Image (tube, rainbow, N blue to C red; front, side, top):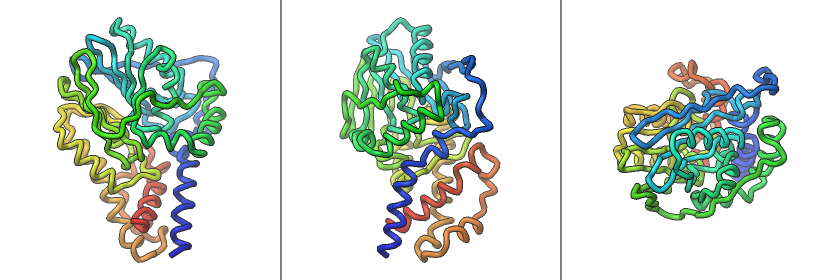
Length: 325
């Protein structure tokens, strides 16, 4: 039992350091010349005052400036509230410029859905313009971790020149410990703590007047979810919390926005459930992971973007996490 616990602990640590194998490290063949900047952000309006930009369904790289996640914003009479800051400072600068084209309102707040690099490496640009940053309290543990430090060091190499020595991790100004109602310009933002799920510090943000929910990486569309060292049971519970809000529109952390939230949340739910069902027996009986993985039927998912990069790692995490439950 001790050896099994040690193996799980080692895997959890390695998953933290090597999480970039899905999101943060680039393929050599994906590199292109950095003499020009061809990455454009095009805000998509999903409600009267709500917009988002959609990242690419691919690995992070220098070529795409780590633009692989979504960010959104809501324009209020007293300022703009942004959810997530994108995966590099250059992308954050572009988002700030796009917001300025839509409204003269100042960006007053940034809410962090979770402290994964593709969502937070742009925070310093919002800090420079005076926005107040909100995040869930568990994010403090990530910021002080060796995992965060090593990932940033690696990203400065893999995503150069867009992430470099001047790129820093930025702490929140306000750490949220419980359900919070933020009201700006008469617009309510209901911020709910739902982690540990995809990450220990997950938040979801619901805007009742717009009937829009920012789900962070609790919901994926159009690609294989990234499980990493997630708490899959907690994640499934978080999806229940999303459905209870009955939003009309969901903006996921990755992929296109959803006008059929129940159907699209179900995709992520089905994937997590299948990982647990296919790995559970082997995990409980301490049967070899490789055998369980080979026996599972992945046909429903194997044609999706990032299946080959992420699926086996996702399954192994769930296999080990079930043993630790």
